Image 1: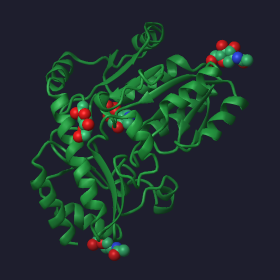
Image 2 (image 1 turned 30 degrees about the vertical axis):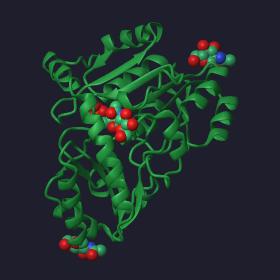
Image 3 (image 1 turned 90 degrees about the vertical axis):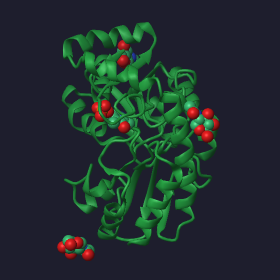
Image 4 (image 1 turned 30 degrees about the horizontal axis):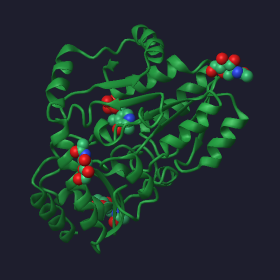
Length: 313
Ligand SMILES: *Cc1c(COP(=O)(O)O)cnc(C)c1O
Ligand SMILES: *[C@@H]1O[C@H](CO)[C@@H](O)[C@H](O)[C@H]1NC(C)=O
Ligand SMILES: *[C@@H]1O[C@H](CO)[C@@H](O)[C@H](O)[C@H]1NC(C)=O
Ligand SMILES: *[C@@H]1O[C@H](CO)[C@@H](O)[C@H](O)[C@H]1NC(C)=O
């Protein structure tokens, strides 16, 4: 089922499936607007959320035991730390209790991870990212059984948020090169993650393809590639990090990812600009955090650009 945006897809899915007064489980690291909907709007319908760490299986078990949980909804990999959830395991646990599992697979793209095959009931993608692939169109999609999609479709017809015909055309066009783009992005991101991890001016790198990632073994099992987004922390403060971003010549400074053009995002002053430093830190967003989406540019050009920007700080 196609919708006007990724947010439209997640919200329609939750509104359609979770009854008033119901309970959902979600994870800590998360696309900010999804978290805002869960924290600020679901309570208006009496819907409560238990928020667990992506690896906290015991937390999931007790949430399932203590509440009548309709839905477990999580990203995998998550934003921006690319944490991975054991989709097969959580699905088994949830299904024992009659709880539905929906995975937001946007960061993986549909090529690197097949959550339905791993057991999930539903998969949501922001098509704005890898599927559209050109940083020029918004869209969202939901995949699952006809039974569940029919329920969601009824809600979608009430809420609106239809994918417009020109956007649909751009999605079809984008998808023709999805496998080529993702292959290149997989490779570039993996190689750059290694370069960054070895660099003295980089404190820390978050990428599921790296052995240092907490879910590396799991990611190897449930993904065929680790995607085009790498998050990392510069060895420096807010201003040093701003200097690094401004010194880059190839990447655009923008909040999206997954397209042909590389994009760089400093969450502290972009997606989390309205929060104070201590409020941001509650979500683990440090001043020196960078989320880098590798596009399809030449690897050597991207590497040279990032290295010169690190030299400049
Ligand atoms: C971008 C994104 C969304 C929202 O998608 P839009 O198409 O921008 O509305 C939801 N979830 C994740 C993980 C995303 O990256
Ligand atoms: C649990 O919630 C579902 C709706 O998600 C409802 O159909 C069911 O009756 C509830 N079960 C209990 C024991 O409250
Ligand atoms: C992503 O890249 C990895 C490693 O290069 C590769 O094994 C995998 O098949 C790629 N996936 C796609 C869809 O290209
Ligand atoms: C960062 O730069 C701004 C603008 O140049 C300046 O006002 C501020 O004091 C700097 N902060 C630190 C911690 O250096």
